[in-house]
Length: 584
Image (cartoon, rainbow, N blue to C red; front, side, top):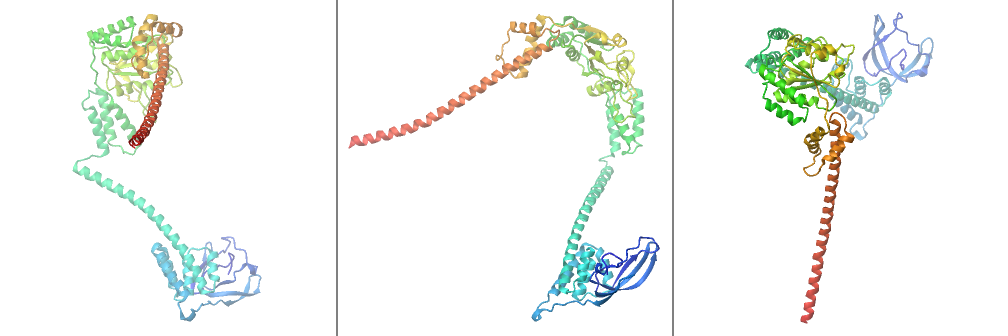
């Protein structure tokens, strides 16, 4: 018997076979020999070597345990320890007066615990069957040894059971080990059940969904996802007048997507490509309105002055009425900030009855923003012009390209050169976007551009545009703009009612002359809004102060009213007392 040296310790007492492996032929490092008797346990198992097998990793011994033995006097300590041993007999506790035996009660509880463990852990059935074939467990002591052998306790705990000769104490320790094993088996069973429930729930849901798809498909209620996707794309272009080249590309891509697996990356790329191709407004045009009186009214509503600019716009609309379309012109509004370049573009779109789309190219350095990315790139998208067509849903919107004089240039290319094809009436009828890679007609689009300085616009680009200059506003025009547009808009924005604020003409003139002398009216708008905010502050302060005074007055009136009834009651009592005295 040893604590980890050349021998092994185990729970014995019956005929139990144990396989022990040892090192041989240098396969493993041989254990150090035991030379100190103190390193041995006091109680061990007398075992018989029944079989010795040579293995590639050493020697395997099959031991048959017979009985407990107690270590006696050592006879030899070198080269191996030899000692005398004596049988360690079980110590029985007899029941006093023929009463119930405590060891028997422990034995019944041990058997019940073993049965519960066997229900939870089938592995113990095989181990129990193997042990039962070689031992008898009718006695309490042998049952204690048998129960301890079933557990997965460590060597120290098993050695304690082995060294306990008192049967009642031994079976109590065995019961404690079995209870620990039972709790471990319950926890293992709970974990296993949770994992199985998760897996079975997912498998069950998957199988039910597949069955539901198959049933709906058989009944004709639903098609496959791929079929539904193809049908959606076909329905989009059914009523559209798609050009021949684009229609050919769409047919090829729809045939291609039918052969791809839904989980493949190529499927997603093709699906997004078809989504863009079928979302464009092929042949859809907004109905234009060339009524000059209506256009003149809209321009007058939203802009004061700028008579030469308005006249040029009306001329442009009149030519469109004669020709039947306003295509083929690119107008560039050049002027200082705040003179209404962008708002004039909105007014033109509203006067013509077209959709309006604006995007700024100030600081733009990537050509892909204009002409799109190649489809081979991850996250590729078409350029702004194709996005404009999808967003407006019409092939003839009014597109305002803002800040065209502030175009940048970087390592991704020169956006100004890319705009040459877009703004050239003779080329944009077959605009080729890098993403779509099929011709798109941009000739029906009315392009408007804005700039602060025409000198920074590249020459070839400026040559393709008709420049309309907006010089700015004089004092009288700014006063009219303030009275007709800026002040009413600021009052509405700040929540001021009519009559809460009056801004005289001399105040407006002083404001313009001394604080807002720029060409546009943006700074004037800021000052008007600032004045309105200060008026709003005073209005709210006055209303809240009045509410506070009214509340205080109501509280004082309530206090006075409650005191008056008390005084009246006292007066009535005094009057009654006086009448009684007079009667007497």
